[in-house]
Length: 333
Image 1: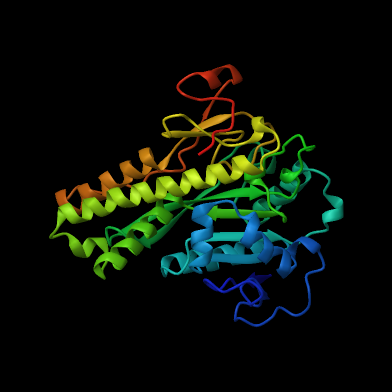
Image 2: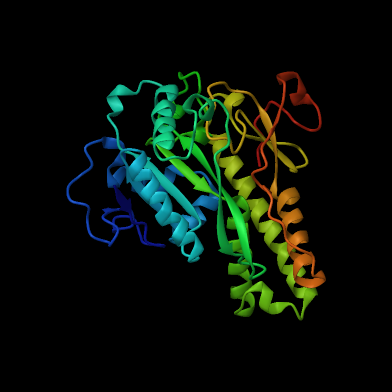
């Protein structure tokens, strides 16, 4: 196992995406499988990564990236990630599977390998159930970036595959595709909390919980951050819509921008059947989160973490796409 060091804001052509041994040193030779070559990873960061929030975290150096060959490697890397989240150093974890790509001919093949690795790592009991729609969530204890109190934020692991970028694959879904086979672990709620903290430090030089003498100012900050997070989500949806060759497998924004639709259920680990699901946008879940933080900071209400932002989608029939502002056409955002 080795880590891929991603230095914040480094220009292309530097060591921004070099494969390293965990101490910033080159990892000794090139990866034998083409999709894990440093240049390919760098190109993906430059132009292949469509998620606006993910780009932000990579640029900030807050993504922990590693290669793994089996469940033992993955379990070790995940524990490193857990510690770095607790130390407020990382917000996301991308783990790239090193394997013989010539043996994988479909998304299903890649998912089987990833599911097996999760089982070997002790993170799943049944591989078949995991890749057929189970959610793989892990609570991590952190100091909440907004309230300053010990909180357990849940992080969710999702599979990404090379063949998901192939329109001929039955499980074609560009929003779950990458030029490598990998699993990605994030928490929308925690990432949003870090955004709020960043903006608080930028505005006032301190964390939100250090501004409890000025409720109006803090709640104004919350509103601005909800708008920023909403706009980042709209950008992400627009990006994926643009690169999708089959509109039925694209992501779509409903007309009032309160929900988004995908051909999969987010954040389940994987699925072997495609079905459109509708999910909440930040204008709903992030606003709900800030209301909880405000009540905790100013009214003494307990803050009980939930799956805000990654609560799962609601299945939709194709015929339902015409209802509640949902269209089967790609929206121009």
